[in-house]
Image (cartoon, rainbow, N blue to C red; front, side, top):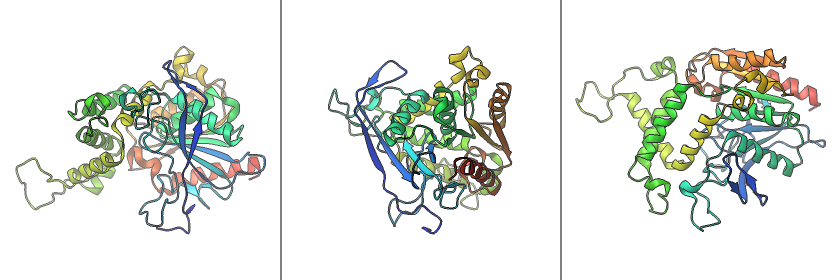
Length: 379
């Protein structure tokens, strides 16, 4: 653990909302809770707040450590902290676990007030628009009328874009990193295969596995293994593992022989121990459904025409799941709509996971952008 360049030991906070939350699918959550972490201090006029939105398997723990014994910091500790690109000496940073999550916010593991039992599969499907709505309610509670920025990678970047479209006056900047204005057909297909691995697990029990005291661990493990492959690039994966065998010769069986097999199984096992299968299902569906242009006659230019934020868009050369072409599609629409946008196309061997890495060029670009925001708001 290195606390010298970290926000240090942080304490999550659970915020309860008694107001009903209408969802895009027509159902209503009578009340809900959001698990939140904050870093830095909110200034007097509340102009220095930055919302960090997480990707599919992320959560509220963006930076720092929960205990002195933690081996690893929050998932974006390279980006957030004192002296880092998103400098907590200048900005008040809010990390949030989205509705439907499994790390403290109301989701499938929560108690359904109508039955007294965990929601399980009865928890309603939520969308990116629903998340933005709930995040706006949190901003209201914090007294933040306008975010200095809303940012995220992958599914988090989709939330930043939805914020800019749905609540244009409530953010000054949107940072959309390794993301897309909608999923490709191939991405939807990958998500369905992952869901099928879970849905067909005998221990899934139609999503009510908690009632049966089981876990669809095998399905979730396979889903994560397959998904993890798509987050990596052949170049980086090949350099790390190649065709390296664990022993000197072929074993002529189906146990682990190649080092990459061992790595993937380890990742799958680790994920299945900490993530909820119903949450995985609804998060991938939120990804599939995201398509803000759909509300504007499938015209992305029209969809972004009402935005007021300045945009920072970043892509990575080896990211084949959210390829640079998808970022460029958004940039082209913003330019056509005469919006302010800075686009950074970065070289990387890390695939989609590049937005989480300690990459000098990437972090330098983010630092410059946040330095400009700090000057703009006097932080």
